[in-house]
Length: 177
Image (cartoon, rainbow, N blue to C red; front, top):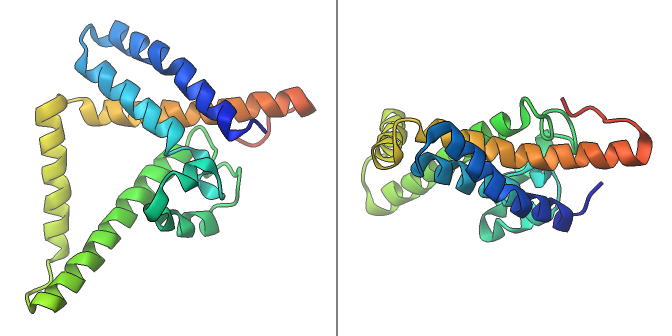
């Protein structure tokens, strides 16, 4: 399989073409910037190798513990982690869930420490909704979809590079779809 440096190089190589193609679709600068930034994040920080002890995993620093359950649940290079169709979707859902659980735990500890009431789950849903509204108002109505497309493309560049490496070595693509 290609090394982490190779995956990073592919990400950096394609950042400008990703921006250019997004610009051709939109004829404006905000959404292509969102797509390109999310592509960079998807390739460098949020790619398929979070299912193992990798450069992507290490880059999370103090927060890499968030990915330990993900590593235990998804076998390395499975269609659920490296898959073009489901891999990124599962990572996004997993990360949103993990962020919510960590925030809930922090709110619980704060409530116990201060002697206050624990926030209700509906308040967490309202917080996510507020974040979405803020993002849409600052970056445009399609910015969340553009960010997901960018993250997906960044992760797909990793998977496609793995597929090319497998094909060169073995003549097979593997089980990435």
